[in-house]
Every structure is written in structure tokens, then in C-alpha cells.
View 1 (cartoon, rainbow, N blue to C red):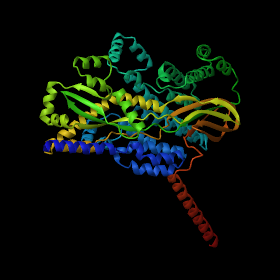
View 2: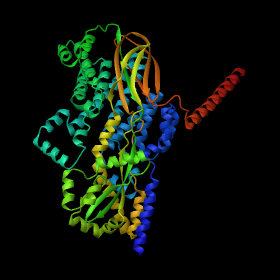
View 3: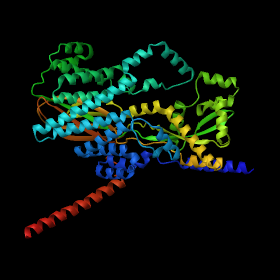
View 4: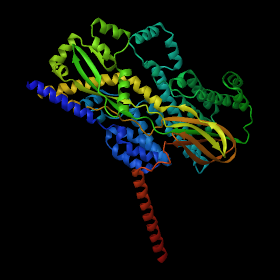
Length: 585
């Protein structure tokens, strides 16, 4: 009787813990994200400094501050933060056993943030942009050359990072050859029989076409035409061989990269340009390639759109039933969030497929067959069953179960539609979707979903075992472990959702650029004045946030702006008093 009461009480309290939920990293960053969207970068930086003050968040803090300072126009400070982040990311790249041990004694949010390969690539990207801006702002030829030399070094570092990743996982050509093998075909057959809808091999991050395109633009600006041609061609091949398809990008990026490859070949007097033009370019591009560029400069627009989709948390309930380990989702939040969590569980973890159906019919497990899209079952070997019993886990997992928590990525729809560029009132066309950071992040999450679940199971089993061995009742241990379990929902949130680009030749002179972006029920217009010099490449980066100008300004933004006005008045009064005092003397 007492045992039943303890079990019932533990389950009740555990349910209360689950329904209350835990604030994700994105939720905690809501104020900072709002300030960023409204251009209050200094206030956002203060908020981030407070939120990410712990040593375990140092890498995350450095990348966030690197982007904020770049948006603010403080490129040297941005570089300092990003250089620190680059060094940390290199040191912390792989997950260690110590991370899992720390997680077992606390939870996943107390583990050192290490980032991933996509974030490492974009650290290099933002550093290259800083050097672009510093070179543009240089006051002497010597300073400009120094900045461009530094940019060259950064480009080489980015290329080494990407080459290293290609060496580890193979490029798109290697992936294409793998698909021809008999082993791969058998793997696909069994994957289909098991109902697997996600093929990790199709999602692996191999290389970054857009990074190579930016690197090529940098080399062209420096005047290293051969290096620019090599990088443009690598970008073109990547876009063509699989990058566009893998991340749902614009096919126009393929022809744009090949066009720039042909330009570089022609500039060097390499006759291969005509073959590239004939095989890869449209009639309009071939015509453009033959136009004179004398007295003209290049304008390259890079639009970073809004912010990357946030990470969330999926709660799971794990029990042992009929000598099987059963994992079920426990969705929490709004109806939309619950539906998304159930869909994530189904695609990532749930039992599905013909082989699973056959197994359940053989076992006459018809009830489980009906519910199989909401559970994952694994038979427990006898040896493991004995181990669980000796550790005290079998009883608690058979009566109460334990809570697991794994991360998921909320793939939110982007509220900003097409973007187009006008120069001095003349339309230059729509920008091309060149990279999807949210798509890259989603692929990373899907590939790592299985290991996230395995790690969560191992960590929670260890926590429960240690508590039981310390002498506490098993039911109380299960409740305590469940109450403190949390997934790591941290991520680099100031990264753009996606990146678009457009390139055009212009006669030397001054121009007014207007970037117009369609949003839900309104338009966003960004205006910038630019000077084009003959024979030079001018890169303009614009960050576009989904802020409706017709909606009231958030209170936190009004508060910051009001505070800034007061401080501005005080500073003006101080300057006035000082100047009067000096004149009296």
C-alpha cells in the first residue's frame, strides 16, 4: 500500500514538473533578440553579457558579441571577440567524456558550450566581413593593404577548415559514388523496411559553397585572379553537385558562380572561359560576359535575413514493459509546439516500417501496433536485464520510469519573402538565395538526434544509479532526477536565418541603393549610399529583421531609447558646462 502511494505521488509530482516546463535558451534570450531586431545593439550586448556570464558559455558569448559589434560598426572589437571564439571553437570542438560526467551530476545546460562545424564556418565568414569593412575604411594605401592581407590569411584558414571536413566525410562526388555501391543499395532497402524517413548520409555537412563564394570575392578584390577563379569554381561545383538540393537554395547560384568563374578565366586570358560560357551559362549571361567593364566597378550585395530558428526541448518518458525499453513523448507547450514535438518524435525515434509491423503481429502486440507512431521500443537482452536489476534500475523503471530530455529545432517559417534591389530608382532584380543557415542547423540536428537520445539515456541511468546507491528511495531518486533534467537548447541565435546575394557592374560614381523585402502584410525598405570605383569590388552587407513598422515599439525598446535620450541630454549639458568653464578661464 505504501509502495503504491509513493509511486502515485512520485508520478503526480513528476507530471507537475513536466507541465511546468523549462525555459529554453531562446526564451531567456527573448529580450536580447528583440533589442537586436530594433537596432539597440549596445543594450543587447549588455543583456547577453549578463545571460552568458558563466565560463561554460564563453564561446557562445564571444560569437554573439562578435556579431553585435559588427552590426554596430565596431569592426575591431568584433574581430577581437571572433578571434577569441575561433580559438575556443578549435579547442572545444569534440565532446569529451567529462561533459557527460558533468551532465550526470547537473544537467546538459551546465556543460561547456562547444559549437558545431557550421558555427565554426560562420565565425570565419564574419571575420572576413570585418576585414572587408576595415579595408574600405582605411585612410592610407598601406593600412588598406594590411587589412586585405589579414583578410587573405582568414580566407586561407576558412579553406583549411572546410578542406579538413571534406577529408573526414567526403565531398558530393564521393557521396555520388557511394550511392552506386551494392552495400548502399542494401542499406536503403532495410531503411525503407524499417520505416526510416531520415537518411543521415544525405544530411551530412560536407562543405560550404557560400563560404567559397565569399572567399573568391575577397581574392578578386585583392587582385589574386587565379585564387579567385579556383574558389569561384569550387563554389560553382558544390552548388551544382548537391549543395543547392541539400539546402533548398536557388538554382540561380549555380549559374552565378559559373559566370564569375568564366569572368576570372577571361580576365587571365585563359581560353577555357568560352567552354564554361557555352556549357554553363545562359544566352543573357554569355552576352553580359562580352560587355566591356572599362570604367566600371562591381557591387556585391549580401543580405543576411532575420535570425536562425531556435532550439527547443522534447521531453520523453522511458519505462520497462514486458522486458522492453519503451520511450514515449510527453509534449508540452502550446498546441502548435505539442504537434511539432510529436512530429519530431515520429520522424526521429518512433517505431515504424514493415519490419516493425511484422514483429508486433508475431508477438500479437496489437495495442502497441496501433500506438507505435508514438513510442520507441527496444528489447532488453538477458545480460542487460540482470545488470539493471543489480543496480536497482529495473524496479524503478518498471514502476515509475524516468524522464529524458533531448533538443529539437523549431523550423519556423521565415516571415520575409522575396527581396529586390533598386539602384537610383532602377530595378536590378531579385536577390538570390545563396545559403540557408537554418537548413544547415536542421541537418546537423537530424544527423545527431540518435546520439542525443543515447547520451540522454546513459546520463539519466547514471544519475538514477548514483542516487539509489547513496541510499535514497528509488522513487524519490526518479522524481529528483526528472525534476532537474534538461536538454541543451543553447545555440548561436544572432546567426541569420538565410543569406541572399546579388551582383552587378556599375560605372564609377555615387549611387543610392534601396533593398526592398516583402514581409507578411508590409514591406521593409533599407537605403544606403555607396561609392563605386572603377576596377574595384565593393561588398555591401545588409541585415534585415522582420520588424513591422506599423506595430507598436516593444516596451523594452522604448525603455532603452528613453534611457539613451536622458544620457544624451546629460552629456550635452556636461559638454556645455565644460566649454563655458573653459571660456571663463
